[in-house]
Amino acid sequence: MAQEPTDREGRPYHVRLSKGEVGRVALLPGDPGRVPKIAERLERPKQLNSNREYTAYGGYAGRERVTVVSTGIGGPSTAIAVEELARLGVEVMIRIGTCGAIQPSIKVGSLIIADAAVRMDGASSQYVQLGYPAAATPGVVMALSGAAESLRKRATVGIAASTDSFYAGQGRRSFGGFLPSDKAHVVDDMRAAKVLCFEMEAATLFTLGRLFGIKTGAIFAAVANRATDEFKSEAGVEDAIDVAVAAVKKLKASSL
Image (cartoon, rainbow, N blue to C red; front, top):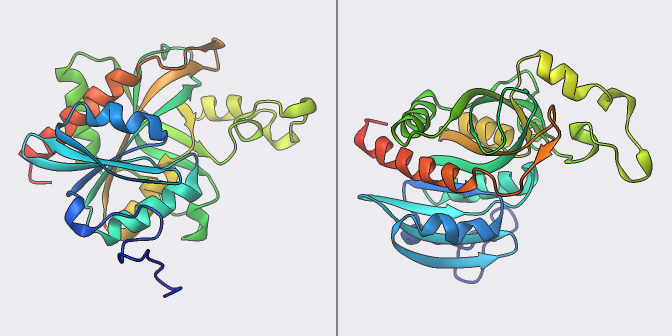
């Protein structure tokens, strides 16, 4: 059926998982290459499928069954993952990603936990007007923050800005030096508004989570700082993974 596309086995067309393969909780990196790294932290990890940008593993965090699924880059592919995982019964979705900090006090390699996101993406506006907030679930934010504290990982909680353009949308000059006039001061404007970082998926996840009744959160490794002009491609990624998995165990222990 074109209204609800599935493959020959009746699985959602893109993630291609069945209800029996997924858990209550999904961890969502963007990069398919990070999926097995996250799965290594789980007990009894097992690859479930890989289709397009959606690579999936399953495993357990304590007694909690967890599904790890990559979303690819940006809001559109993230929205597809959220839609299809929701149809399979996932109730909690936590993004594990990277970001570029814009506040000079945030060190490269440290962690950012987003409790909300500025909706500079395009996907979420396909669902609801821009005045609708993109907010994480407080219980998930608290679990991530508590896990970071217990693991003694440096983490800052606050607002991220989610864009659909890595270059011009985040105030970087595009090829040939092109930069729209309305993006020339976007970093300064967001910094003044106390936004912590740029990334590309959280606003879509948070918005759809609120619309669908799914609990959401996001933790990022700050691999860059735009204020200090530093960049280290994998800085803090392992810490972000450790904190997210520890947070899942905290969620299981709570009433969430």
